[in-house]
Image (cartoon, rainbow, N blue to C red):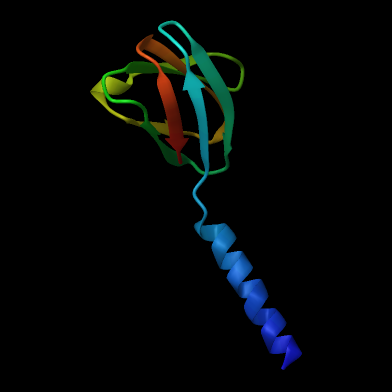
Length: 106
């Protein structure tokens, strides 16, 4: 009985960790303010979706492992950025207009 209960708990913990979505969040104070985080993925393709305050204009700069610029995105034109190739990415969020909380999910 104890072994089957332990097995059930381990299965639940494993399935919870597999279903967890990764995310980062922060706050930009004013126009020109920026924040960044390092994202690592071993997947060949992932999508990063951003939430930010309506009425604000936030931009995102993606840098590769060696600091090379991979893309510059205006989130008012689309809130999903597709990253390919895996590895480390530096994600820089910049306020072009407005302030508020931002969240990135992948």
